[in-house]
Every structure is written in C-alpha cells, then in structure tokens.
Amino acid sequence: MPRNQETKIKILSMASALFQKQGYHATGLNQIIKESGCPIGSLYYYFPEGKEQLATEAINRIKDLAVQELRNLFSQHEDVTKALEHFFEQFLSFNPEVASNGTPLALISLETWHMSEKLRLTCKDAYEALVVIVKEKFIQSNWPPAEATEMSYLVFSMIEGGSIFALTYKSNEPLKRICKTIIELLEIKQSEIRRNREI
Image (cartoon, rainbow, N blue to C red; front, side, top):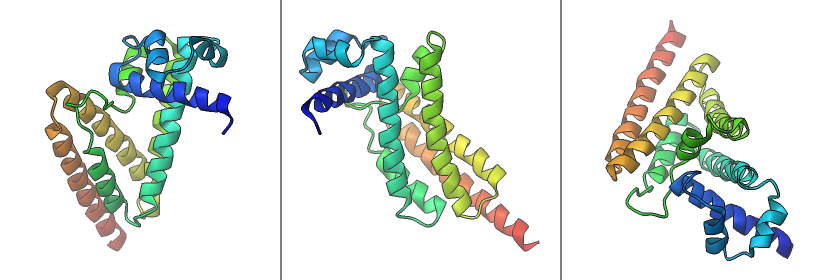
C-alpha cells in the first residue's frame, strides 16, 4: 500500500474507533489527528469537506469491515442458528467497561440522523448491508424470504438495542439475555416453518 494511502487509512481507522466509542459530537478533528499521529494537513488533504466527509468514510469503513467479518463467520456454518450463535459468542466479547470498545453504529446514527441527511443515509446503507447478509443466510437455511427479512431486521434491532443497554448498565448481561432470546425465537420459528412444510 502506498505511504499516502497508509496515512489515510490510519486517520480513518482512528476516526472510526473514536466515533464508535464517543459519538460524533464528542469527537473532534484535533483529537483524531493527535491520536492517529498524522500531520493535520493530511486530514484536510484527504477530507477537504471536513468532519462530515470523514465521518461518512469512517462509517463506510466500519460497514466494509463488518460485512467482511460477518461473511467469513457465516461461511463456517451451514445453519443460520449455528452461524448466529457463533456471531453472538464473538459479539459478547464486547466489554462496556473498557473505554476502547465501541458500539456498532448506534451512537453515530442517533446523533446525526436529524442534522445530516448524508450521514443518515450512510448509516442506513450500512445497516442494510448487514441485514442483507443475515437475510441471505436465513434463505440459505430454507427460510421463506418474508420470514427471513423480518427476522434479519429483528436480530439487528435487538443487537443494537442491547449494545445501548450494555453501555448504560456497564454490563454485558442485557446483551447475553437478548442473544439467548434471539436463539430461542429462531428455534421456535424454525420448528414452525418445518411443521408448515410437512402439512
């Protein structure tokens, strides 16, 4: 990778981490520059439109990394329930007591949806990309498309909500309960789908 691209990736990586951890408003450009160790001129060179452009590209980076990780993880399991159980095991390593941990997209989207249409749409696209991967896995596991779509949105809604609970409570217990409930719902729904096919 060319050195100039390394600088851009370093800025984006730090911005992604800080936006996830602190949110949009609490993260300043000076902090990003200081913690990334890059010269301030490089930030304005790569992101001439300022903080909104940087946040947009940071969200896209979060999305791309999450999509890649989710695809890799799901490829290890044929069944969607097993795939999600594995995903939850990894996700529960999230530690709300550790300052370096962030929450997926919740902080950024909650802060920016009303002030920036560009950031709102970027967050929406990121969510949609993740939902599509889960939906595809449900369909591969022989779920009807309508049920696959509904359950995919439910899974991510519960995970995002659980992340906010975890930060508020400074505990992973809410996330553990939510992940357990999702798996139980999946098993009930899977049994229902199988019974309907046998009729």
